[in-house]
Image 1 (cartoon, rainbow, N blue to C red):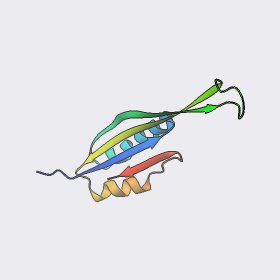
Image 2 (image 1 turned 120 degrees about the horizontal axis):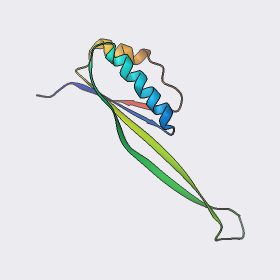
Image 3 (image 1 turned 90 degrees about the horizontal axis):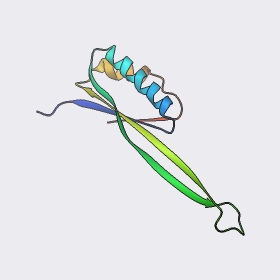
Length: 101
C-alpha cells in the first residue's frame, strides 16, 4: 500500500542553525502525536572556488574559498491537519531553506 507521508528537507550553510531548526520542527510535530523519522543527515555539498589574488601579476598566487551546504531530512508518516497547522506556526530562522513535499 502507498503510505501517505510528508517529507521536509532543510538546507543551510550553518549546521548549528540547521540542527536547532530541525529540533524545533521535530518537537512541534511530536506534540501533535504524529509518527516521525529523522532528522536524517544528508551528505554535505562542498563547492570550492579558486581565485587569483592579484589582477595583473603573480599567476601562481591564488586563494581558495569553500562553501558547504548542510542538509537534513525529516519524514512525517500519515500526517493529520494538526501537523500542517503546527508546521505553519513554527518560526524558522533566516538562513534555513525549507522544502516540503
